[in-house]
Image (cartoon, rainbow, N blue to C red; front, side, top):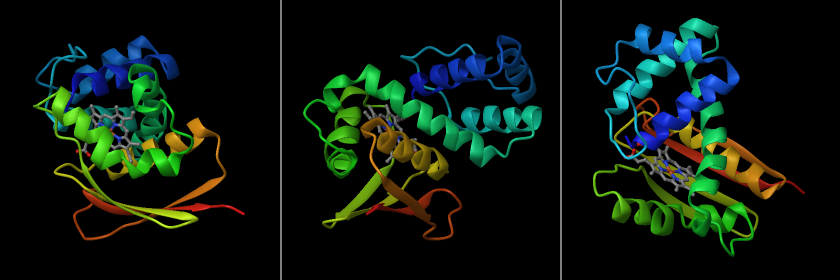
Amino acid sequence: MKGMIFTEFMEMVEATWSLDMVDTLIAQSHVASGGAYTSVGSYPHEEMIALVGALSQETGVAAPDLIRTFGRHLFGRFALAYPRFLQGISGSFTFLSGIESVIHAEVRKLYPDAEPPSFEVTKTADSLILNYFSEHPFADLAHGLIEGCVAHFGEDIEVRRVTAGDLAGAQARFILALKS
Ligand code: HEM
């Protein structure tokens, strides 16, 4: 998993809780990297799961809620770091329609070691269906990223998650519907 995701996570923890909390998570999670993340590095995704698990223990907030909240935050950070992906895009249906063919395709080119998830996208006039498939159990992160995207465009869209398959978290279906 790309280092930027780790550095953004640590920055969110520091801003929401404290630098002491960052140190506690590194100590509690026993991550092999020792928590010395750089945005250009790559680290095992298991380290993210361990850090979120430690944050959950420290705060009493369920891990899926923490990672979904992080997803919402991360979308805003992606929007700042990669403004060209959003240029000329008028809304989340258009943006998310290109998540596989444009955004993550570009990510794979920029970072050959990246392993972004796959999405199957179906668009109708007033809804968008995203089927998420990944090697990693980050459907909650995807959920938060989708919500962050909708918030970014300031749209009135309901995001519903329908779990598909039995690979907890590594497959999910999201249904986005325009509220009338
Ligand atoms: C400008 C917007 C976006 C950019 C630049 C971006 C880029 C990336 C990058 C660099 C990674 C790391 C891949 C790796 O660690 O190997 C990633 C992972 C991920 N992305 Fe995106 N992404 C964007 C938007 C989204 C959105 C809107 C979603 C949800 C629909 C999404 C879902 C995910 C998930 C769930 C992961 C975690 C990896 C996994 O599931 O295996 N991303 N993305």
